[in-house]
Each structure stands twice: as C-alpha cells, then as structure tokens.
Length: 222
Ligand code: C5P
Image 1 (tube, rainbow, N blue to C red):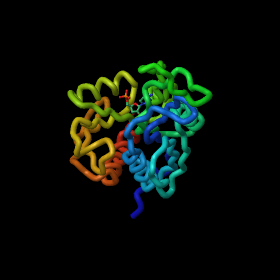
Image 2: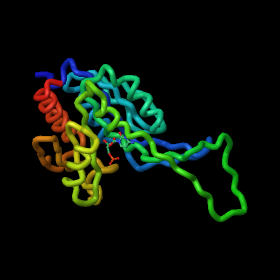
Image 3: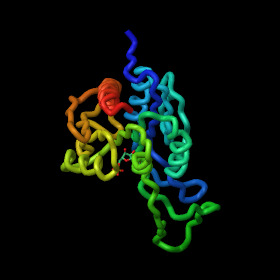
Image 4: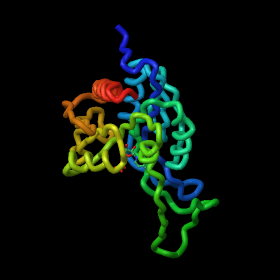
C-alpha cells in the first residue's frame, strides 16, 4: 500500500552547503554533502508530498518526484526559500548555511601582492530557518543541530531560540555518523517530547524522520 503520510502537503527543504564568493574564482564553503537533506526530500516525495528542494552545490542527482532549485550563496538560498514559503506546509532546514560571507565580492580576481597576510572581512548571513519560524502562519518548521558536546541541551536551546517545531540533533564529534557519512544516529526533539533513533543508513533514517514529522504536524493540524 502506498505511503500517504504527507499526501496533499507541500514540503520545502534546504540542503547542501552554501558558497560565499570572495572574487570571481574563489569562495568559502563547508564539507556538507547534502546526503541527509536529499534523503529527506526523497522520503517526503515517497510519502506523497509535493517537494521543493532548494539545494546548494552537491554531487547528488535530483531524487525522483522532487523539484530542485539550485542556488549557491546563503543570500540566494534565502531568496529562493522566500519565493516558495507561502505555499508550503512543512519547512525542513537541512542545509549547512554559511553563518558569514565576505563583506564584499571583488569584481576581478584578487592578485598576489608582496604582503604575507590577506584579510577578508566577513558579515553575518541571515538565519533562514529563524526567519521562516518567525512568520505569522509559519509552516511546521524542522531544523538540525550538529553539536560536539552537550548535544541534547544545545539542541533544546536551539529549538526554543529559533522558534522551531522540531529539531534533529546529531553528535558531529563522532566520525562514524553525520557530516558526509552514509549513516546517521540522531535524537529528535520537539517542545513536548523527544525520541532517540538508532544508527541507520540515511534513507531508512529519513523515512523514520518523515513519519515523526507527519505525526507531530498532524497533531498541530498543520
Ligand atoms: O545555528 P545553527 O547553524 O547551528 O543552526 C542549524 C539550523 O539552522 C539548520 O537547520 C540550518 O539549516 C539552519 N540555518 C539556517 N540559516 C542559517 C544558519 C543555519 O537556516 N544562516
């Protein structure tokens, strides 16, 4: 029997890293592979949702049944998200958005000089998920917390501070799970409960996460 947990719902996700340009040929980025976000997009589509995936640069194919919008920088990700926010019921922020960007992008390639040091001044990027969660009529909003210590405490704090409905916490101090790996082990936290999930491959984990999201979202009549 087909999985209809999210039938009739529109799910908007972010995934992957962002690239913050320094000049026309250089950028600052991070090691996010996009695997967890893409697995969630696929699981949401398999659960019957309309899925829009706003993705930073990754090597991954578009999951079947998913509409992907390619972006590079955090500012472009922000623009793409808010172009589609109105019609979504569920927002999942799985992207590793750069917290800062160079304050100016040089219009031509920066040349080597005689100096031993080169300073790049950075300015804060908008926090996309906080802005989503701050809207009146906000979608059911799910974020990630990658932490190295006091994982549950910091994730609970992030849930409250960002105004999220659910947060998926994982311990990135462990090299066998999380960033860039094919498996993950997470604890899911929402305002009135939490659930630890076992170590699973990202496709199996994504299915369980989508089931939990559908459950809590239904309870809140989202
Ligand atoms: O604050 P921190 O980066 O640890 O929060 C992680 C969560 O916030 C993730 O869900 C991530 O996608 C989201 N985020 C965002 N925009 C930012 C930074 C983080 O949407 N600028």
